Image 1 (tube, one colour):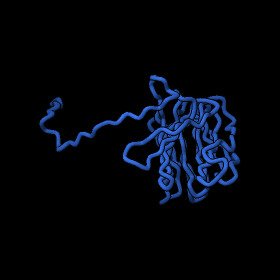
Image 2: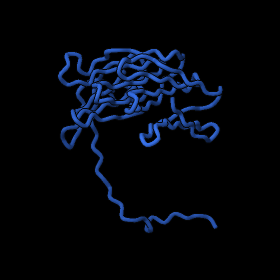
Image 3: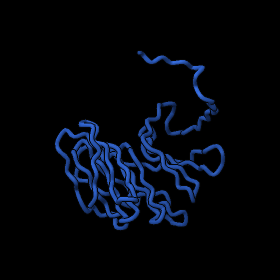
Image 4: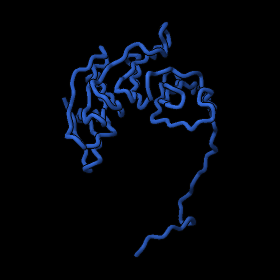
Length: 196
């Protein structure tokens, strides 16, 4: 029996009014943001935004977010991992680099890039996950079929994990219960379980 759609059968739905927040550097271009992260303590939102050429920074201390400025990156900014305990944000980029941003509000280099980590790849550094137990950052480099592991304290690349060619590695998440990083390898419909 084919499924049919009955809009009257929907449960109670609440519609929210959308608020548009202007981002001046974009100049009416379509934003292609890949990831948004919020520093809950500082009430600051970070959004990777290729159209603006970096990471857009917003004040989210009120009900309506306000764009403050863009932190320029050397290439398309993809995904972001915040590490408030170390006052750092890690940002993946299409040129296979990972930028480290100082998020210490008391620092003279606040919201500036303080380090750049080379993954060793030629394609994009894309998805990212933070393991707070070991203070490690996991970054997928899907075009090069590997992940890298970065020491979040020293910003040093500590390990490369290779995948078979053609295995599309994408989203990843850390599970504190078992200490594993789970990663979508959607080309073959599997989930990789990573522990180092």
